[in-house]
Image 1: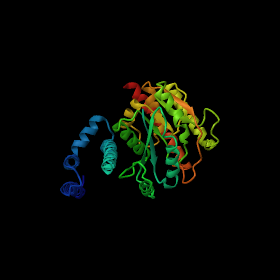
Image 2: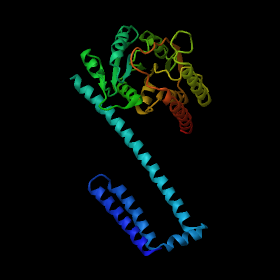
Image 3: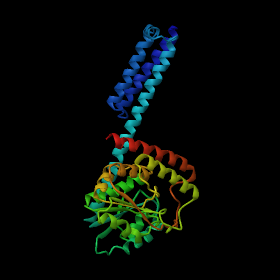
Image 4: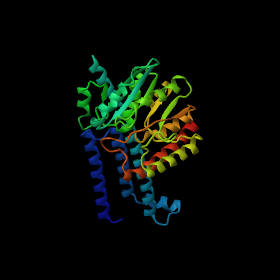
Length: 113
Length: 237
């Protein structure tokens, strides 16, 4: 890999980690999810610094080109993350609905007195 | 016997007074006492003010939840206040309160657990909705037959009465959108008895139905999917 490209990619990853920590500090992202993203970025950092890891694994698994494996794995991981996101959203929706129902009933009961 | 009529209302200020007056005509009965509760689902018209002015018994949801969440609020209220039977009744005055007794008596006599006001089993109703919609309902009826081996003709009727057991089930678990066909699968799969009662329904006087032609394809897909998945979930339980 070209040195310039490598430095550029490393910079991108560092910006990524910085953004994650910034959003945690702004309380927009929970520590738990922040950690997941940071781990993903650190794995990316390792792969950029030691590209031979990917080449060896992809050769071992029988891929013709290393990027093919990389894309495949990335897509799987993205699918998984999005699916988890849908699960979380469904749970939050359910909790939200319960809260609206409970508060509305309580408001009605208090109104009677 | 304490009976609660649950009336979900979203922007129904024009129809609501007629609906409540209709129900009040049938509140005096020797067999049971009939209360009602309006669930105002975050209406953006003056539904809230109409209820306040007429001193209607109402729960104003602090945020719009959609039909499923609104109706479920009624079931939670019924459970909390110890009602024996709950009746779903549309706020747009499509349903006739004169049939409440017909719906309730089979449950009081413990013959069935749930009754459905049906447009299709006797020719009482002049208004039966459009041909296309009737065809859609036939398909849903067929899906129910496949999944539960029971025949219900008016799959989408929102005029239904249930006993205490089913109030409990609905209070803890109720679909968010297009709940009617899916809940039928749940109830029948759990071994409860459901019966259709012939009723007459009115055409809406004011406002529009919630299902537009564009949404109907999505509606059919979602409801069919929900019925099949629900039947599978109930079977493996």
